[in-house]
Image (cartoon, rainbow, N blue to C red; front, side, top):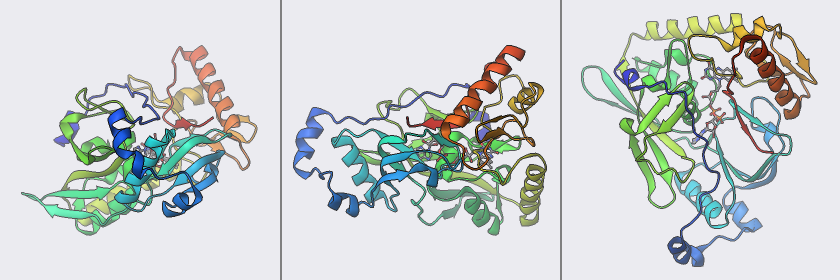
Length: 342
Ligand SMILES: Cc1cc2nc3c(=O)[nH]c(=O)nc-3n(C[C@H](O)[C@H](O)[C@H](O)COP(=O)(O)OP(=O)(O)OC[C@H]3O[C@@H](n4cnc5c(N)ncnc54)[C@H](O)[C@@H]3O)c2cc1C
């Protein structure tokens, strides 16, 4: 795994600014073409108003987004970003919402879900049974696995059972004990409101535990919007690829509440080989409930919405877990799940 050697576990995941402010020059140039915030514009760009985020997150909680869009093309995405920029709207970007907790009062400004940005996957043979895979952000990770597996190309076996989009997986450096996205990503394509789509080579990317950050030379003024990625993968026997996937899925079913409404592991594993789930379990919190949110009795690092939980229930439970683990073991847990909104 050539690529994995480049992955540095810095454990530092920087927060991103939520607004992309135009420069005075950009303003002057763009003013005459500015799309007004009218129903007509919303219709053209497929924008919904007051869209309940509980419909778009695997936790099934979350208040309304002021404005919500799911662009199907780069062109629409570009228009949406320009609209956000020139109307000074706060911007939140998401994938399939499987690692996201949205607070009960929802999200102000524009939420762009990238889960509909799906262009056909392009597979190009390079040399010695090595392949370049170009995939867009909205492609479902399991779908990418299926398509590459069908052609006898392996490398995503670690991802069995990880829901969500390729964009979300790259931004989270999603993975398991068997590997992470850092093992296969060669470059990413991000949308720059001035320059359009630009490619960032692997040397600009810093993957760490459930995090992607960027080298200093990448401008930090905006939250990166990932539109696609190029992966490098190798030929592998189809049976072997399938068997690895199946084994991991079965392992998951045994120890994780795969059917429950949650977002996977809530906390990152602390450094030095400790498991957050084990610490929460040892703190006696398996099955513990706040309102309708519960620590899974199967895997203590999973918080589940048992039906009508609010984001507040989940956040109260999260604080309680953090406090108990800190008091008992002197360890501060860090969120793996991203929390958005107010
Ligand atoms: C049952 C279950 C099991 C899970 N198991 C695992 C596991 O084993 N390993 C693991 O790592 N994760 C796991 N997860 C968590 C989650 O599935 C992964 O983190 C997934 O990769 C998130 O993808 P998403 O498209 O849903 O991203 P989202 O949840 O929508 O977003 C996650 C983050 O990425 C950002 N983001 C998403 N797309 C883009 C984009 N195109 N451009 C810029 N930023 C973007 C968002 O702003 C957000 O900060 C699990 C979740 C569930 C529900």
